[in-house]
Image 1 (cartoon, rainbow, N blue to C red):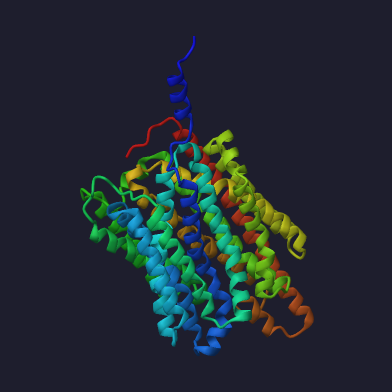
Image 2 (image 1 turned 120 degrees about the horizontal axis):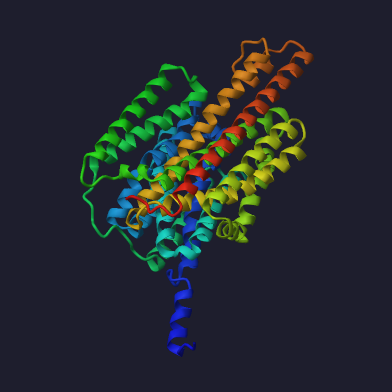
Length: 501
């Protein structure tokens, strides 16, 4: 049977990707904007000595300078995603760049700790808009054939931001004053804004749902309270009144948010998503990837500095192989190819198993040898490169396209929650093991070492800390492995079952 030239042309057209004609250029712009947001999650850490000297910042001031950004950003993610769906993702992306750039300029020339904290909070608002709209735009401009690869490249920026933040901050502080770490955001924000206005197509929910103002207030208050409790836990103690009250308020308000969303005609977050096995599986996996990654990096940073004796910048360099592995696998398209071949459930199972295996390798072989840690970091990076894009794609695929902003907000919120949960749980395991092995009443390794009365006692304290690290990393590995297998099974069962929206 022969086909006419018109039919052949039509078949070729159908076989070609039907995304936006400038989608890859737009993705590059989006990734540049995303990178500035992620850099500011870590870049301030290396400037702490300079801020203490030049602004006279107290310990509490420093904590708020760091936390104001992540607290505001995580609290607003759902609200920002909902606003993008209602008012237009291009508009909110541009607004996010303006707010982020303005906040960065204010921060660079802040004359007091209070001004810098306020500027960081303003940057957090812009960051929330950027984190949600960038992923939502990616989903809009790429079709199913290319979306996994595009989300993989988008996810790669998370790893680049983590690795490059301390390194870039250290370089700038070696050559310029502390405000320079914020000024570098300005040209990126201006270039990004011009490119967004020129290139990014507008998209929004065609139904034009009414704004859910009470839902926005409840979700922001609840998420900010929970994240504040997680951030404050290591400093003030998990059983302190400050932490318990914040956690209780956050959970109660989030419960009220869920009830409110169930009983209004235009909910910001459709709670019926949680009846979809595909969505539940992706949510469970996303939390546990962030749990394993956030908790392990929290532990590894301490291990490199306290046990192996590296300076902060040296420690950052030695964690870089994890990010390099993620970047290499996603830039070369290996992750997307494996996803296409294996399918989402098997890809997530493989990625989570590799992540768990990397944690176990570090626990068993990296105690006093960086080579063992290096092997574990590379294995972890391979797991993240497979699991994270597949998980984000699964979440976004389980949500109607017109709700892409809310989907991106859910994805970002889960990452924040998982990171905090990883730090809290694995940190608690470490502290419990450490306290059980040493007879001193100190609550941290530096305090315990300061109270040591002999070289032998210092060695025992270091050994106890290393044992606590090993135990906590093995606990993290087990949680990630079991959670990954559960998420993969839920997604496997949901294959072929239409989503219930």
